[in-house]
Length: 502
Image 1 (cartoon, helix red, strand yellow):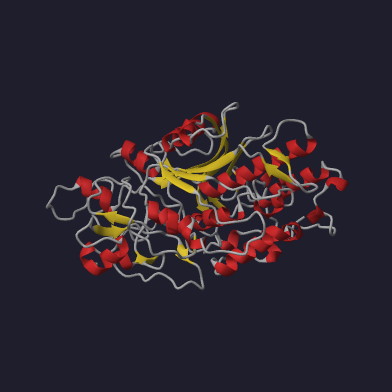
Image 2 (tube, rainbow, N blue to C red; image 1 turned 60 degrees about the vertical axis):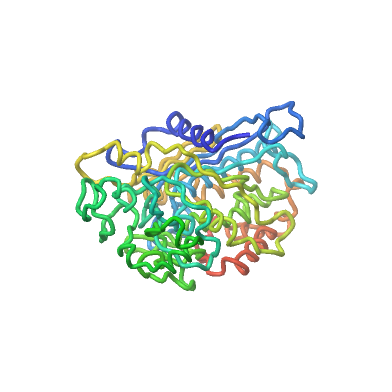
C-alpha cells in the first residue's frame, strides 16, 4: 500500500512546496521539527480481497505542523486565544481538527463530496470505510518514546536500535533524544554517539569542533538534548542487561538518550542515577520550560491518548458516531527504538477496558523511514560545518490545513507572528487553530445545520461555554475518564476556568 519512505518523501515535498518561507528556520542558523497527517485512500475499482501490498492507494497530506516550543504556565490565558503547545505533532493534530471541521461542514451542507457519510443515528456522521489516516513525524515524540538506548555498535546518530531492549515498562532507563523547553531534538550532533565518530579510536576525550567532549555536561546551554553526565563505566553489567533485555554478551548499551520532559507531580519520578538508571520509563511527563513550568503533556503522552480517544477531540465527537483514529505512525530518520515507540504509544494503555461503544486501544502500525528531514537539527548541523554562532531551534510554528480559506497560520509564542503586546486580545491576534477559533468554527458548523437535525447530545440543554460543550460530549468524557482512572491518573488538566470562554 505505502512505504515509510514514500510517506516521508511526500511530507518533505509538501513542506518544501506548500509552506511559506515565513516561519521556516533561518538557513544555517536554525532548525525545526515537522509533523503531518496523511490521508490514505485505495484507488477505485480494486478488488477488496487483494493482498495489502498490491492495493494501490492515493496519499494526500491533509494537515501539517512545524514547531519546537511551548509556553510556560504563567503565560496561559483564560480566553483560549493562545497556543499553549506548539510542538510540531500538536500543531499538526490541531490543523487536522480544522480539516475535519471543514469536511463535516461539507457533509452537513451536502455541497461537495466529504470524507464523512451519514451514521445510523440522527445528526451523526462516520468516516468513509475506505479511508484511513496516518501520522508522520520527522522525529520521535518527546517524552517516553524518546528514552532509548545508545548501543556500542552505533556509528551514526540515526541508527535504529534493538527491538529487544525494553519489554518491561517498569524498567528504569536513562537518556533520550530531545531536551529542554524546545523539543530538543532527536538528532543530536553533540551526543556521545555522534562525537564518537569525530575521535580517533583510543584517543582521550577532548573538545571537538562544534561540540563538547563525550559525557561532558552542557550546563545551561540553550539547545540540544541532555547528554549523559556520567560515563558508561558507572553502569553495572546487571543494569545494562536489565535495560537491553539481552544477555551481557549481546550488543552493549553505552548509555541512553535522555528526555528533557519532566515527570508529572504524583508520578514516582526519575531515579537520576548515572547511565541506564537515569530515567524510569512508561511515566507521564510534561514538557519543560525555562524557569516557568509548563502544563503541556509530552507528545508521547498525547499520541498515546489519541490512540484511545481519537484525534478529533471532544467537540467534534458531538457529530461523530465513532472516533477518528490514526492507522499508523511513521517516524523520520533519527535516534529510534521500535520497542520504546510501542511502549509509549500502545502498551501503556493496552489494558484499559470498559470504554464506551466505538472507543478502544488501537493496534497502531509504527514504522521508521530512512529519509532525514532537511531542516532537522542533524541535517542543518551537518551542512553548516564550522559556521560561527550557535545552532538554535526556530521560534516560529507553521500550521497548514487542507481547507479552501486561509489554510496557513504562522505563530510565535502562541500568537500569530508579528502580534504586538498591544494587539493581544484582538481578533487579529488569534491563531486559526487556537481553542477559541476552533470553537468558533464548531459554532459556525452548528449554525449551518437546522436544529431538528442536531445530534441528541446538543439538544438536551442550552450550551454556551467551551467547557459546557466539551462536557456534553458524554461518550468522549466517559472514555477519557476511564483512560485516566486505568492508565493516566496523573495527567495534568487545565482548570475549568481556562475553558469558560464563549
